[in-house]
Image (cartoon, rainbow, N blue to C red; front, side, top):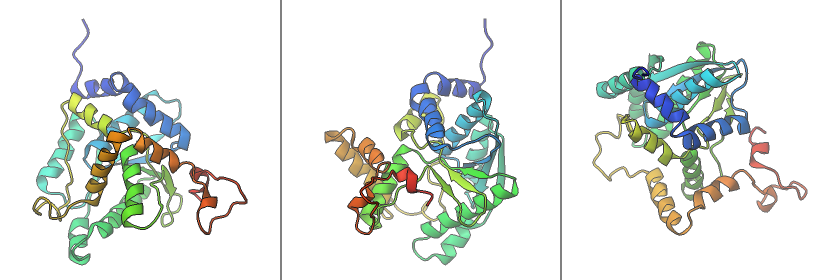
Length: 278
């Protein structure tokens, strides 16, 4: 009779076995397709405490265990000013899942809320990214990994069109302009959010939601999220067109620049991924 597995071992088994098709396979496909991790990399796996980043940490742990590509990982948690309950939840989940986190503290929430007027989200996001790059580089990392998934890619693209008047996609990897030699990667680029939710429920895991100190005291509906509006719209469209999100995802990978004013490539269609690093 075999030994009783620890909770974190059961979680790992569920990734490799029960959810292999939904989680492990698209994870490894994204790594190969976009060449996200190479031999010798030292990756800062950025954990916010939500379901996405926690799953990403487990996926990368499994990758290090099973891959022939030697690389290092640091599991980095930035505390931007979390409420004590959220900070405790992140630390307890990390212990439960056997993730050896490195935590550092900042005053980003306080700074953003006091200087950015009624909508500090943009400044907060920029500050968080800068702190992550800076700390990761100080720890000897050449890459930071963020837990954005397939649905984030679709929603961000549509949000840019509807509310930002621009065609701009969320990239699978991005070289930093401000931190030389640093690169941002999104290893969960091809994983669907519904599968992440299913995995968390199967393992009876609960994670923090939005931990923003600015929005936590607002009444429901007052600060309606544009992203939630897009989620609702896509859900509605999916009823009649089940492949609508897949079509959008495919479209951003094959952009015909000749069809846009100001972009001429002498009749040649250029792939989106051929141009992202220009």
